[in-house]
Amino acid sequence: MVTATLLLAAGDSAKSDENVLVPPLGELLIGALSFGLLVAFFFWKIYPQIKRTYAERTEGIEGSLARAAHAQQEAQELLTSYRAQLADAQTEAARIREDAREQGIQILTELRAQADTEVAEIKARGEAQLAAERAQIVAQLRREVGDIALELATKIVGHELERDDRQRQLVDDFIAGLEHPDESAIPVPAGPGG
Image (cartoon, rainbow, N blue to C red):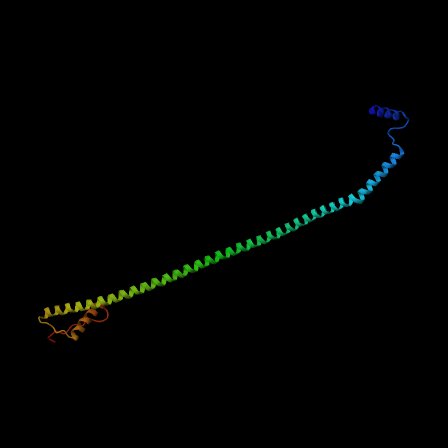
């Protein structure tokens, strides 16, 4: 029944001459006053919080952008520094390679000079040894040739010659004359007859 009463009441008010689209003045004033209070409350409490939140976000974003720009600048400076260090390292490596090459050439030159010196020393020792052996062989040959010459002279003359220093000198002069035929004439030994 309550529903029927409500429907009848609504039907009675609709029959009156009032325009449904225009609200009554009292309701209009209460609505305007309520809206004004809502707007005032919004500007008094909510808008400052929105403004503060917006400012914080703006500052955060701008701070992030500033930090990003600062980080990018630092990264660029670091990159420039690394590139400079890399260039220095490459220059240093080239200098070290050049020094190593020069030292290698110097060591090679020193080793060659040392080898040449050793070869010269070995050659000089060999020549000295050969000269000593040659002198020894020549002395031995002189003795043997002298002995053979005395023996031959003894056979030719028919009796043994005394071995004295004069005869030995005569044999040595004869051998020296054979070695150097241009220097002087070979002395002819004096025979027993004169």
